[in-house]
Image (cartoon, rainbow, N blue to C red; front, top):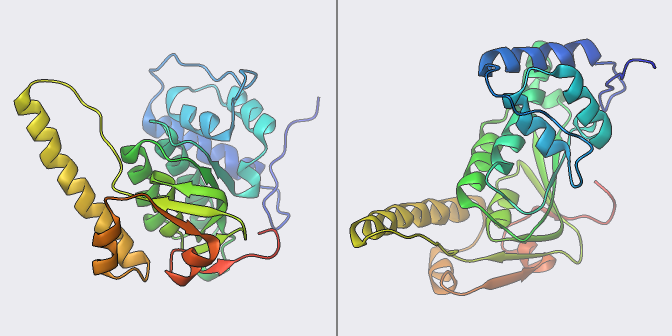
Length: 246
């Protein structure tokens, strides 16, 4: 069987550079974990594969996983429900393409964008923060595209894209979220104080990356505020409603 080749969006064969970067990430993160990649597991996707970069030295298995999902060489990341390890997986893919562009000496203005297609009901906030930091730190352009729904944590990932798009019938939801925790009264108070800090961070994020006035933000944040694609555009949550595939 012929060896799997990886082709960049501009048609360049990047197989050797791809494997070199994968090896460097594996060496950097260590190889102590015994977790193995199983690309035939039902529901297995590219985010699982890249997340497991940090857990295995089996590059051949990783190649098989990428061959199965076929997303890395197209610079595409699909964001659905945001689970505990979703943010780290997104960060790994963004870091891979930044490493690739740097090693090739590609100027920032000439780099092919990484595209995050979002159809997310929300999920883990701390995981979303990891993805948000990776997007904001990325020198390679990140385009976020709301293809269906960008709710709760998915909303915050959408709005930090370097360029942001929405499908015509997509929608957004933002609110202050919810929290579940246990423990004694002291631990509950500690968490409540920390959650207030997270809420402040989310408010700063929204005010910085949208046209939503602070007074309007404060009046809606305790509700579920639903936005159509047009409302998302009017409020500066997205930059464009696309009329064709991105």
